[in-house]
Image (cartoon, rainbow, N blue to C red; front, side, top):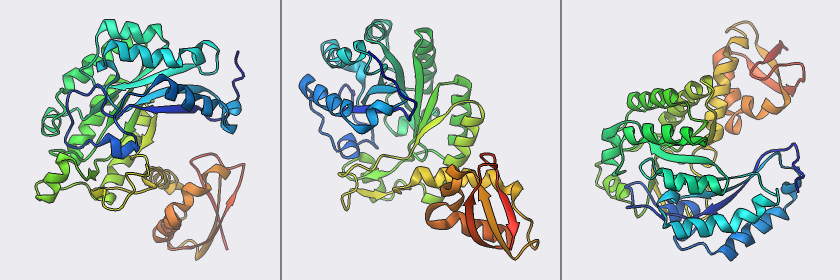
Length: 345
């Protein structure tokens, strides 16, 4: 059966933090990031989570539906556990309630036998925790794999017809803006189907927290992280690689006081980046300084939040650039997305 709607995609997340991981990287504390403990996710619990999603108001109108195993290294789990997890969601795929499955793994944790197992259960997307394409950065972060492993993993996944996602972390030890943008250029060459950007945040209980407290590691500032992610998104998406997530999710455990010790954490980090990119797009449509004292802006209806920016910072930026006071923002269906119209008042 299938009653696929035309709305936003629905992804049901199943968290398996640190399962299958050969060690813990210096930045990682998946239990706090996801508010989930690193225990075996029983099939009964998986079915309970998926059944709840099927009964939710969003289910019927979803444009596509996917079940996703996040966290951990899925393809380094014992094969019996991989099979148990995939068996638990197989009935929902067979019945047409969900169209696909996605998993996350390490670039050095793939082999043809395990990929064949994923294909048999109709896993369609594999996301790789690449984090960087600079071997020194990877070594300092104790990732245990190289940029070459990521290149080979993408090749292998494409050969077996999987959709490929790449997860990247600007601001790791040894990283710099120049190095990270070089990482972006190498990822563009690989042409994955999607990317995620997770600026490095210092989480209590990690090895990176120790380095931070000992003043041996300095994370990115919020301003620098936003700027680097803006440029990274522009480069990736100009080359046809959508960035599907920017910034860590806001889990209850991570938001507890004292859990984030430093780094560019912001509840609306992704929106800061997207509104910053939008401001760059509309620059050519704004009046030059001195042309008007007061203006009203007209934009595509869905882009009003982007032009306003976080707490109206976008409007203040426009005022700084134009020297004109913005007296209002109105929706206008005739304005193309990424453009803006203004009238003097």
